[in-house]
Amino acid sequence: MLFVYGGARALTTIALAFTAGQLTPQSRAGADPDFFSYSALWDGYWYWYIAAVGYPTELPLDAAGYVAENQWAFMPVYPFLVSALAALSGAWWPVAAFTVSLLFGFGAAVLLYRLFLLRLDEDQAFFGVVIFSVSPLSFIFQMAYAEAMHTFLLVLALYLLIRRKWGWLFPVTAVMALTRPSGLAFALTLALYWLVRLVQRDRDPFPRREQVVVGGLAVFSGVMGLFWPAAAWIATGSITAYTDTELAWRAPIIGHQHLVPFAPWFQAFDFYLGAPLGAIVVVLIVGAFALSLVLPSVRRLGVEMRLWVVSYALYLLAVFFPQSSTFRLLIPMFPLAGALAQPRSVLYRISVIVVSLVLQFGWLWLTWGPVSSWWTVP
Image (cartoon, one colour):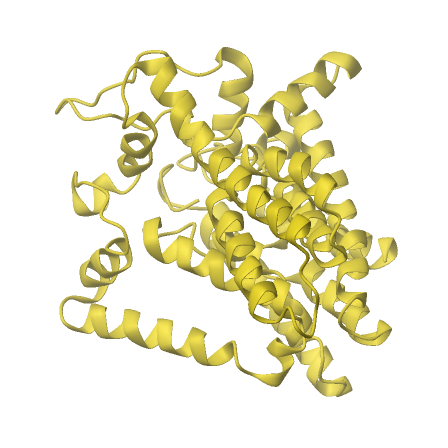
């Protein structure tokens, strides 16, 4: 497993080094940046900035008086962990960030194999990890981003959920919710799981004590999902500090608007495609996703992983504005790699690997390559 993931990251490193060498003076990193500075671009800069100065107690405002982009959009666990490693080792912050991400990525791959083995045979579980390792956005697992750490914690949480290790889920859920926004989605997963277990209690006993524990865990995850917005409120004095900060990233596209649940996707596609085509496309995407959940290969993943995929999809549909980071935010739906891994055709599997690697390099080149201006999509 380590050989597979290590080989995938070696290919990614070569692609990153090559792409960095093609940068222009107009790109965000300038021309010919060193590898570790390059790996700390985009969100990496924000995490690095958080490590240096922390979070603001006064929200920055743009020229029109609206809340501007700031550190409150980024959770604290990853940058503080990297800072601790940098302090203990004496390493430069980008080097420590690269190391933390790389190690958590390795851990996620190993644990994902264990997770898939709970529902698939060894061959399918192994190829599921191969797909995960070479997926188009997998290069992010060695950048100064929190994705690798969050993915590890999420794989662990799903593993503990399936194994019904309720006590361990409390601390894992807490740390996960402060690494990437996921507490509310996982709370919905647990609530739906509670309902499924209650309905099926004749076939799968659901004792009263376990009902209380799982219900309490769902509430706890929900509280942790609201902890960071509450922290931003307490620190800044603005009850909408977190949501205003998140909205600042979409303001250049659609202007300053209030957050209306389930509206962002329609707003985005109306902007990109125009009305009514945008709304039609959103409905088609949602319908296609819903149909995919009843495929035999997806059903074989088991109720826990499917409930997570559904919950996270609903969370994205409710609050996320589709833009350049859309594909990166789909990484937590990695259980679907287990569905893609089930066909045993050699031609199919080779094709999946080749297509994934081509898409990976294409996305890297378009977003981190020799762009014409520093603000080009992350």
